[in-house]
Length: 447
Image 1 (cartoon, rainbow, N blue to C red):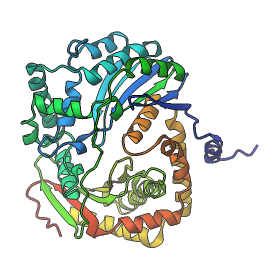
Image 2 (tube, helix red, strand yellow):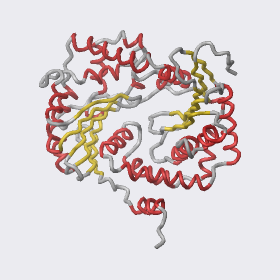
Image 3 (cartoon, rainbow, N blue to C red):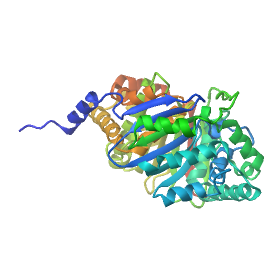
Image 4 (cartoon, rainbow, N blue to C red):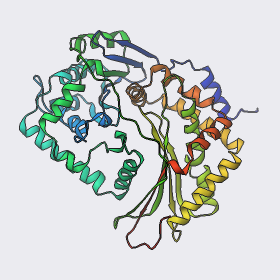
């Protein structure tokens, strides 16, 4: 019997899947809180998430890190809960909880047995409006976030390099400020700074509720109306208006030396458009471009040319993440092989890019990678928490439920011509930032 290749079956599965294959429904409470419910009855588990449309890029100048600071403080007490009681209660009931801050949002979640949804919703609703902070709470937690910066950024040359690269990429836009904050500004954060941020942004009309798992949408809506519905909205909630980035007229280059560097590497970023609501074609082309150039070390254009053919590198990749409220970045990285200088590695990378712009992708590789992306979109539906995160991230970054559901179709519709048009528009060295991370004492001169 002749069997069709696996990729044919995957394409047919995608074509047959309806737009709401995840079982998604949504509603909005009278106080302005948006809610999304994703049904998945394969396991008696629920993921409950609250996303706020406020991240580090919304911070006032001079208070960098306050969004992340408040994220930590949200685990303190309320008028009904003692400090740490929320997390302890979740743990006692066999669940887990956490939170995270990004440029465009702050999110809190609990993963717990489905019959404990009401418990976690009641506690999350309580801290949306009734957070209490003592003198000890905020000062202790400020030391915690400073130590987090010590461990995750200041002790990691790569993290420091990334921070410097973003600051060079965004001269005016707040994406150039690190999410965790600049250390000297973190050290000056106060209780009043945290409470001002809390009162300004933590409100039902600035939040998105996402509930995913073994749930009934009608019951989720009933609980949401009971616990979140009575919370008063914030009047005069500010519009998300940010300063724009001026046109980049000249290439920017950084050379950073650090004795802790284990492997020198070349990093380059280009400013790139984000996914736009109702029009995701260009972002889909950039996603395909990143996968073609550096998605897989063994099959990508950069990986095959630099790692396997010329053996000038031990690693090469490309990355594009389009979920962003404002312009994002497209990033390339090459880690040269032993005995290969950073200048040589950068020149080799540029030669590969020039060849790609001249010749375009191999048609068979293009078809294969598009199929792999489609398959990944199908498999992503098996992860209920990942689905919840996909919707929450999108809705707090300017996208809609329809955009999330049409994204796989946008990816599958991308043509080679569209990818090449996106590449030619993107790869202008005058709009790039290139960094060399290296050990001290190198005699290599950066051009």
